[in-house]
Image (cartoon, rainbow, N blue to C red):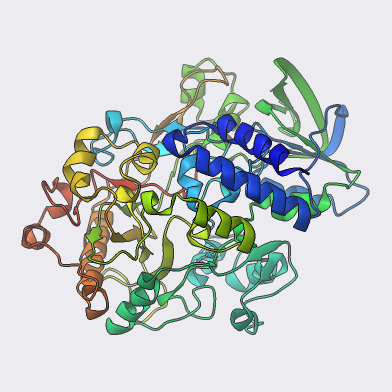
Length: 566
């Protein structure tokens, strides 16, 4: 393929997703190089978008995201089974390959662009007090938009699921499946064959590029008494390098990992731009036997001989169930939907592992990721030719740590806070895309981050791992094209406030270690005083150019909603 042709396709790709603003020329160039390299080095092309579908399949999978792509791969291993995967979006783009640009995909055409209902407990810094929930409307789902972090979860989480009455979901039960899918590219980690494997569909590797801040984060962890470890290994409490679902420095979405290698299977059909609007359920047997969907402007029906599998995510799956008559009876009747099955739990029990945003430390050395320093031809060529450099960084995420606050049992390896330690933060792009992705108001951004626009910083973001607050999702109407009403209910349980408060204190302590102080990262006295206040995290901290200590104003929402389909 001629480079000019590749550049033209890349420019078209850049325009297609939208939202790239003044940086649109550089993603287009990067996409051209990435497209050229892929053409040479990767024999796996995109799956076919099946134009003509059968009337019936053994399995119909709704949603080709992080789970649906895997299901389609596994079920179609049986040659005698026919499998249809229905996805509302299209293919990922060349731009989505570039790890550093993942936030530039938020609010693009690859994103459902969900927004929560206004509530007083959180999202006060967002436009209209509504949090932005990014969900992938694309083959591969949110694995195309997220930051590619590969963290399996804690052993105790799986064992707890099993104890609730879910046999087969304990840690020892699921570990073989994690290993079956993994292709671990770090030879040191791969030696631990108890926890890792090679040869699976999903490529897992270390970031090809880290700043000097990465090693300093690990030193800070040691200084605070924590072990340096593999967070997907025997123990989780401690500090370690992030592991990423990357391949050759580019994103390895579930569509790339699990669908491209099997695209030639005759028993697997993939239909893109196919928006499922209803599951067809027999009123007597309560068995799902097909789905209605829109494609090419037409309402269509396809039938399932064996099963309909809902894999549409924490928002769309409960929405589809309720549109199909499965959900809380009173709510369904209120919106005029015939009740097939009264299931009070559908749409309830919404959980999200939010993080505290705004803990940003300005530093004195040019070692972090600042966008106006990275947007140049040298970094573009380095990315395209050598498959490394700053553009392979996943928005500055370098080190992860899991710690115990006073609310967790420190003798047990079941931490309640995760630290995301980053060599970039909200102001690192000068208030362009990160601000837009999170939906921050101009007033808040200028007040908290304006003085450190395009300055060297690092961030420490404490994330709550086991929230007790519960939200819910309701239908806006019986129109399947109307987005549902989403109520996050963040921080409505007092224990969540306590855990996050301790997480913020521990995050500040990271910045006060000798390892980080050598970069020049002092905590202002005003911020220190605010932390001592009983309600510090429920108050807006004004005029702090370094860390802004707040959570009801700026929670970070990280693709983690679940629990809504029961």
